[in-house]
Length: 257
Ligand SMILES: [Zn+2]
View 1 (tube, rainbow, N blue to C red):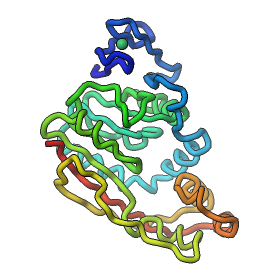
View 2 (view 1 turned 180 degrees about the vertical axis):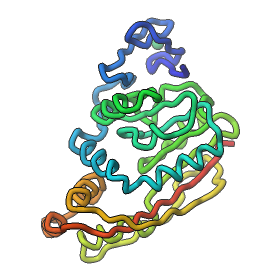
View 3 (view 1 turned 90 degrees about the vertical axis):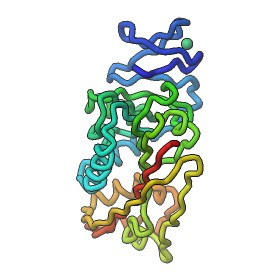
């Protein structure tokens, strides 16, 4: 176990249903099996139960299965022993990642509850991706998928020669959904936000998928558009039977040294 105490930074060890450090700071495993290492309740701004349910239902349609397969393929080339998924959500990608020791980090209790019940092969930890309770240089591979990139923490966590995989939406990602919602849909900007790691390769994955009415509503609920869309757009999406949509992902591969 490569966990460190979020209070004093010393190693954590399992003792009965808790993780305990030498200074006896004690953290409990939840009934579902994830470990709560978040110190402040005010830190807990992770995804809500509703958002988690919508994303889980959408991902379970398999629409992002090709992305998951591609991430797994890239990561398998690195043959990691220790794998970390930062902002892992309900563990859709995490559960399939290679690695003898796997950690999923997220700030959403509903998402981790689901993840830890479904996937016993990963230790899920309630903590911020910007303050990860894991030892320095412990990770062979780190993934961040559709979430802010915590560069300094990733650099601290990666072992020399380790790999960081960062997934964002490509320029045409979900363009048809945006065309339904907005009069003037825009394409996503393509910028590399990472400064502290060395970019090794960039891959683009593009394919079409068909979303039925329910999948469309769930997809809408899990995107940032849900907050930005006016009533007319919402009515159009509520009235749609199905939609053929472009999935386009940019997968950037970095190393820490
Ligand atoms: Zn401690």
